[in-house]
Image (cartoon, rainbow, N blue to C red; front, top):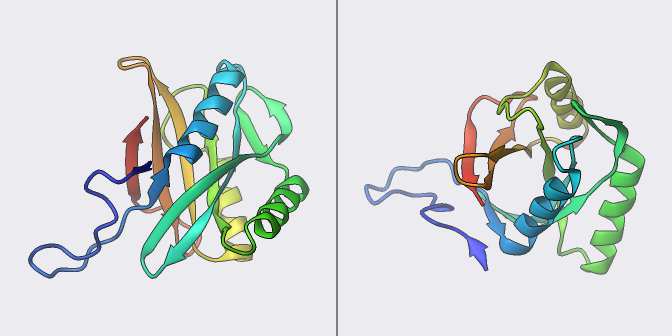
Length: 167
């Protein structure tokens, strides 16, 4: 099952081009849901988005949990060596069908904006990979679901969210 809703449409009825939102397969959302629930909001969880890009369309097929280099209630520091290892394993397992699309992590405080540390990590990762997705996940007490806001990091900046979803 894939979360599409009115997403991943690149041309409006009037023929105007607009930004395509990334599409998330249910399996990827389940991994994120499990990681955040297991953290019991006592520490930030995070990992990688894997999938494929076809032109403007990004399809996240898997989310992979990557241990934080530091287990801190208010910080997720992606373990770069472990992330690279997991990415390589996924590329081999999928025979090249899966590639790196981005990163995600939870904020236990419920704040849906990047910290200075997050912004610096996005800038550094952009220098290494080019355009990628970066997402924050928080708990929504009003509906008991998780809310994920996804930004496309271009030129090292997260100017506007390309997808907001509850799951």
